[in-house]
Image 1 (cartoon, helix red, strand yellow):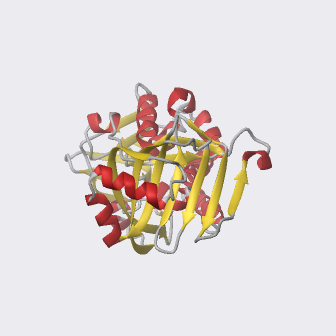
Image 2: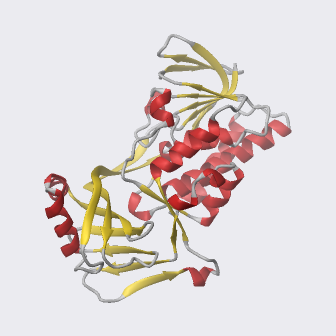
Image 3: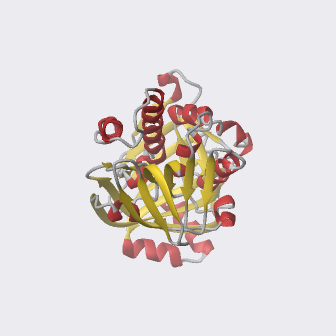
Length: 342
């Protein structure tokens, strides 16, 4: 018997569980992957832009201090270019009276750090190599049947299994989905000229390109293009691809060279029509899967899970059932207010 069962040991699922380290709330995290895969996530090409608010949440979860400063890049300003215009829209850290606009951290580093933090915490159990087959509710708890044959009980089931959430479908919750018929190609590149800790977004009429400043003279290059063009970019040899990127940036950053692999992701956004059901709630991309170009995704996920953590803690303090609709509806309302305008 657990208080909460989290489906999905991704960064959002683990971060949510870590919000209860200082409590007597018992949590199980269920994931189909092996412990080895969860503890040693592969490089996936994605770099995550972290806001100051997200940094504060990660500090409260006691995660931030375990990320090496050598792996964190600072974003001092952001420039946005429209079409062929020579004028940039500028966002500068001085305008918000902070030392920077935010931080850039590789996705796999965030995942790895969260897992390290998870280890040896008494009230959190990881059940790996298992999927949730079914969930049956009654007035007091949910009964979860796992693919390994085990059955576990929980006051609340939390789905953190991504924008293509199987749990969302299993529980009969539908989502608005938008298919852009485009792919996003991400890769790390080295360039001759300094990025000066500036993020660039080039909105062109055939594709969109972003440069996210990483450490030294390296950046994460994000190209959004139609399926045909993205397939073409993925098949190019490294030298030709590097030249193509250099040309597309009009040699703005001088010579450019591809480091490592290219990764391609389909452009699909999701927004669940409801975030809750009986003793069940969606968090992270399972609730709202943002367009990656906005850089809001993980930041919104962290804001959402903080809302739910706070609501659950207040409920426990006031001796209210943490799986009750009163609690879940409060979370849903607050997250809608943040997510819908974005």
